[in-house]
Image (cartoon, rainbow, N blue to C red; front, side):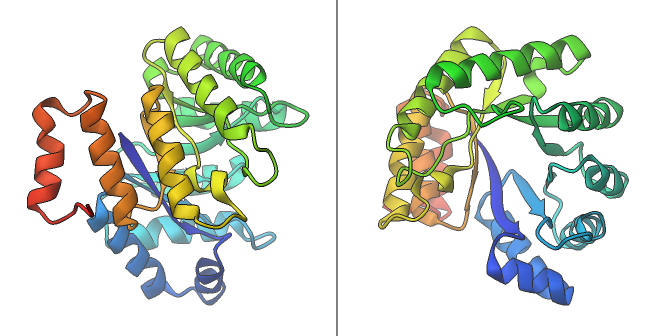
Length: 266
């Protein structure tokens, strides 16, 4: 499973403070920790300081790349911020997080993805409210896949995010998302699915337990990427175990390697 590391996000108080102070050491400490913990991509988000997102996203790209060779996930709905940051990316083509069916966002981000040959996280979000039911999630996801592939994006470069909402505000959201993941993976061979995992537990107790439980259920339906905290050793251990159980880790070699390297939290 593709692990997209979530911790360098301006919505976190510590990261916002580091951005305000331009504290490179704090950002690089997070980048190193996530790299060492097994991240495949490092997500960078600088979007909560009004008017400074292009500047801060560029700074985050430079700051993280100074200490990690892991590819980046550029996290912004603002095509201008993405356009500013993309030329600074030195590693292999990044993931753009994200595109949706909102017209301005779709057109701007699509043009950048085609120009720079990037991967895309595609949110099941239309011009109005995000899709809540499994049926609506699948309908929006299908439209995204069809429009993106017609425009020239390879299906293997699309990561559909059905958008899971906090269970504390929508008790059916996790199940609807899991059902949508299964149907999208069935309907579009070669497409990927992902989610912002920690959304499911926002505002609730026992967040890590809820995150791990939802993760296993989503993996059982085919989800093959997630935006997660790779420094959560129990979560990462759950990924290794689930990959083995669902037949995605041939001869359990990934599980064995993680055990031998002391990365499993039993």
